[in-house]
Length: 129
Image (cartoon, rainbow, N blue to C red; front, side):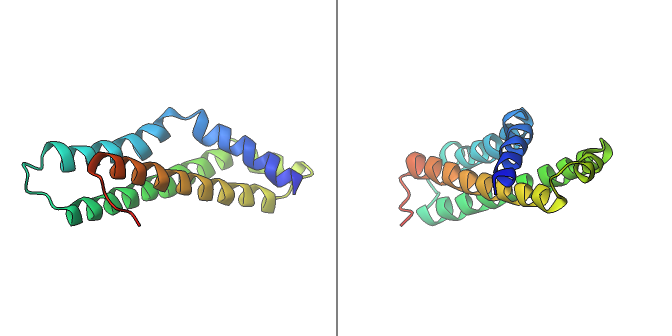
């Protein structure tokens, strides 16, 4: 279990904290679109149901971006750079490697959902309960 947590921490730092493109494309762009279409371009015609539906749409967009593009790019780069071959030579297993990837996805998905829902609730006074 300790090796899974160590691998998870290393992967999290490498994939998300040291990657400014992730924060920009997976968080700032969906939040920007949400604020643009619900606050700036609404002209007083937008209802609360549209704001709620658009919040869910932007959350889905963000999750798809982070899951499909970030994960596939990380796995491809790890394979291309020979990290999987190094894992075969190390005492950790590929199961640990993939478990760490899945744990990171769960954490990032949860944080992404919370951030977008909080921004939507604060900007448009949505009732999320």
